Image (tube, rainbow, N blue to C red; front, side, top):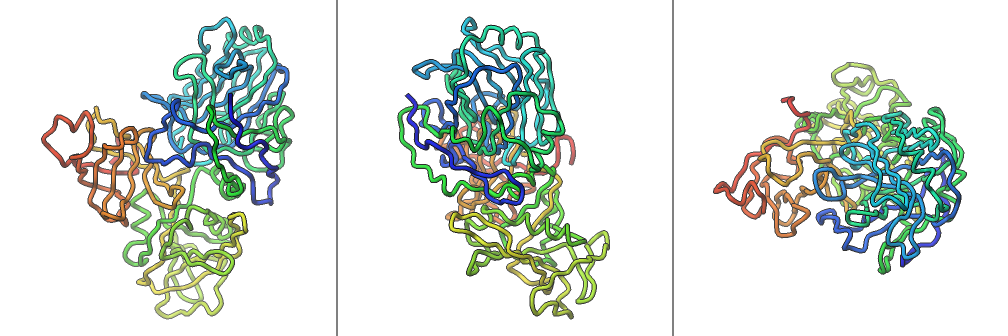
Length: 519
């Protein structure tokens, strides 16, 4: 029996201009340093028990952000949904559909009573180059009559297939749908439960195939209709444990900013605040270059407003930073801009473009030796913890001023890096995402098995194998290097196929933002 821990998700909003929307972070409270331990652990599942008959067509649309790949082996999955009939004891799915996004691409399956396991169909071979730690809008459209399955990512069609098994198995469906779940599924084979460590919001299910323009409007946070089959605000969604364990989930803190947190990810690039104060003259531009990025810049009012909005993120304020100050109503963040000039004219470094919009803070500019430009973003925080932009102001500073952070513009959804130097048999991940964890720590989160974080007690980076608590390596480099470039990995306490039979305890490795084959 599933033990329900939250009966109704209170109404959120999808209307542009209204900041807060409710989100559910499935299993987000589990430490990122530990391997997801399903099916043995008491993990969380989001589902609806609303009953309805099958329709000839469906569209499933939702927004999600996966923390790490789930499952074992070389092909982890990042999100999963299922819809159909569940046995009375909820042990397995009798009939229905499954859809999962794996590292190898999207896969779709039908289940009928006469099948011993799922009938899987590869929805082409599309592979998301940045599957983790960035918000995505995903739509799956399904036509049971023709067998056409199409996947849209951030408003664009990325995979499509037509398969004869889909209408054939649809014709065998005998029961009404009694369970729709997202982030989890009950398998007829394998480990039984599929569960993810993923944040979800804005789930809509329709009884027709949406057209591409409708999906694009949905992805870009424009006005769109609610799902006529299931709606994120219809009160039917349940957060529960697949087994008998009670969770205490504070959904009052599960609000996110729709436009700033979610829809910004659709642009294909992101701004990222580095967590330490540095002088512009010595490190600011170079710090961004090390992660294949540029120091943030702008030219006009619209670009300035969008830049300031990109700082409205709770992850930046979780821990004290030199460049973040507490105010009466919230916080302020001060970051360097890629600009240089005097009190009358400032230009973007490199291009030389004149900045036309200069909203100065009171008493500024000072001129003289104050030739470097910073942006101070003022954030307000409401009683529920939701941040909003109060204002943004400019301040000129001397270029050797410390305590100001660098903010970088990255032409990718996330700051992704690769590790070079590990032997082919190493169990450590090769691809990582630089991200702030729930507690505000900056860490590298691997695709599946590994995490790299800075241990302030010993002032070293710890390279963890999430499957074994007693296995880890260390790198003796300071935090402000964020481990980019060449390092020496101490593998004395790393239980790995490549190190267990080696006399070498130090392995040279390199973290780089370059793609394979590029140096």
